[in-house]
Image 1 (cartoon, rainbow, N blue to C red):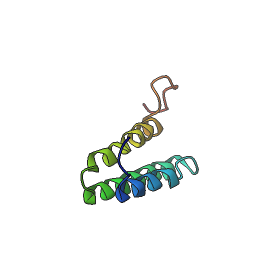
Image 2: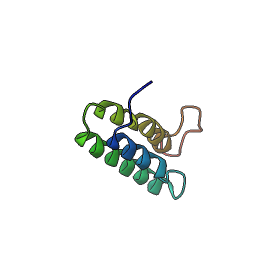
Image 3: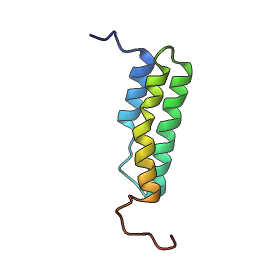
Length: 81
């Protein structure tokens, strides 16, 4: 069984869970992804031994952000690409 979750990890998870990544225009959603990622990294900067695990929470955000910005490989090409 693992030890208790650090206050920083709990805070980072709250940021991740409360980020509204589904509503708004594409640009608004991209901004929401960026804000959440920046907040989580700021938390990790002041975290102790679990800072790496906290930063890892942003991997999914980065992947989703890339898909939103660039589209999935199986999507129709966007005009101008």
